[in-house]
Image (cartoon, rainbow, N blue to C red; front, side, top):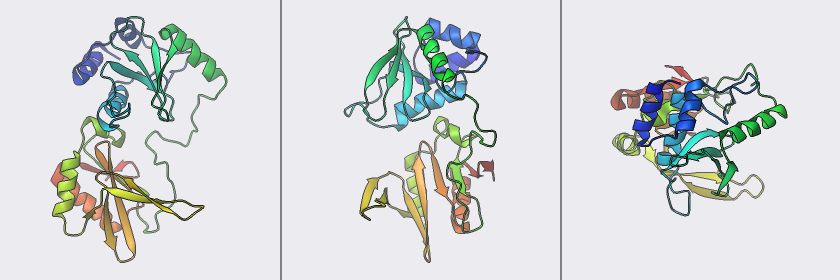
Length: 257
């Protein structure tokens, strides 16, 4: 991390980071020779993605209030929970946000105590990821029955995981869907309880479908991009058209198409 990287983060988010935290980023942090990620993220773009997500893409999460603007995410636990510091706290006490309860609690009094906790945690778990897993590999690896890719992503970013930094807006995507003669804008999806068979409706802005005979492709909008699992060939053609009109790129199986 460089001084220019830190200034870019501060300017993009409109904040000033505490000096102790800035110094740690500039020096680089390793614990027992390993990067302490994801608990303490030190990549500029990954930090921006986390902070843009909680500010602009997670909606109202604190009793109908947005993420506090003075909280800066410094890492996460890989399970939807975040670690943050307050921009006006010179001690850099670390705050834990639980995504299930929405509660904020102090996790460590300062960064040294936080790093000690990470060290202790890593001693009881493997820090080496499986060799065959890539950072941008789709989590659902069932084969596509149409013989095409298992996942397609429409994005403006250089990589799908950075979509929130250069997003396709919901308004842009909805305008494309409405102008198309075959796509249907639903703004919700349905999920079936495997035990009772009961269907539940889940609100999801930007959700669209493409029906071709008995085949239904579901286009999921979120965090500045559009995704389809196991897309049909016709769905791929729709995304190629969208990419041309929206100034975006089409990734299939996380390779640029």
